[in-house]
Image 1 (cartoon, rainbow, N blue to C red):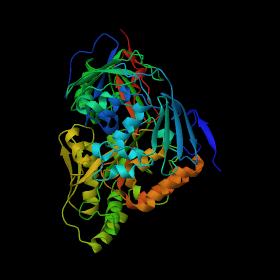
Image 2 (image 1 turned 180 degrees about the vertical axis):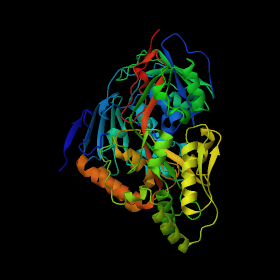
Image 3 (image 1 turned 90 degrees about the vertical axis):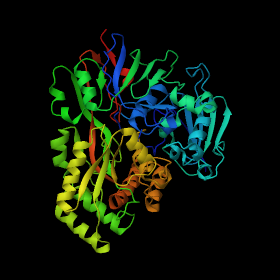
Length: 546
């Protein structure tokens, strides 16, 4: 018996786990004076890709895309979901069929209307593997997705499950139940695109036309990205300032120095060198609140001795248990991070401190040595262990600390491997060219355990189609995620998500380290600093004294 209910998206389906882009950051110092107008200058890093929402999975581009585009829904600071361009999302047939109604009157900054085609054409473009968009896996539950992943797929092929009924109506048929679909609808991957995006994608990626709180002005590569308030924006995130200037830095220290000198208004990346002092610095306003970001490092399965097998699992577990997370958090993060106990962050409802197998996240050098010895009995260790990171970020100290623990505990050569820029680093991660372990982490795209687990570890997100950069594939884990998406309630879904995490704790496709607080600093003239549920800054709320 089929049932229907209309979801206003103040509360989505019962199985949706409530509680934003898979993102990492940093980026040339720009020390020009901050303007006296209400344009807010903020810390930025060079985006890894052109500014297509469906190809944006890191913070440099994510911060920008978030301000430029508006999707079907938005999320509030508590993880609640509210309609944006959507008027309603109606689900039926056990969350395998959705009908989306759009509000009328929305338009892009070039004056063209936002219609059902704006969404459907964008989703088809992102999902089609010929277009090489990093968020393709976000559409994996829509009918026809697998056909779009074939090597010889026509670049113009579309998802069979998507139908434009009229200018304001989209019909969505799924290949499996997906109660998280309405939550995902506010993520980068689901943003609408105007016709100009497909006529000249190269031009669009450098000068996007959008429908969000801000209108794009310019992108001077490795220097700045400027945007102004969009007077035609009709959504929930109306800007209190006149615009944003993302100044691109290659060092958080340079940005922090500019902030203290009054040449930058706001940064949400506090350098390691300032973590002990930024909250007591009288020349600034400081912020330190719980957030939704996770910090990990990934050991890809293609590395010798680290396959998805008994030896690889033993070595990952041994390395994890070699690390004293508590001491590193105290000495390096100074109260801005807490040791991880699972793969989620505390604001997410499925988060748990009681997962079976979470002892692999606790410092236990004797057990680590025992596990390493068992792995050596399978295949003797040769070589060295390295962790790569981008040197223009804030990972240097904690990566070096981890390598020291691994070296001293397991008596092997272990070293940090700096890569000069985040662009170089992310290019190697995205293309699967890493020849060592590498720093990783996640800031949620949408408020659900699905975003942390399915988008990072499900097989559908591997092979360059999503955030599963280590290409982890475990059918047992995939099946547990499918059960979570089919669950009739949040409570039942959380049980399946947690069982999936217990599988991850055995395999450790990434090694959880810490949950990071939302930290930021501004000049005394800036007010309105706030964070979303994931710990990201709400840029539209920023304003400053004239």
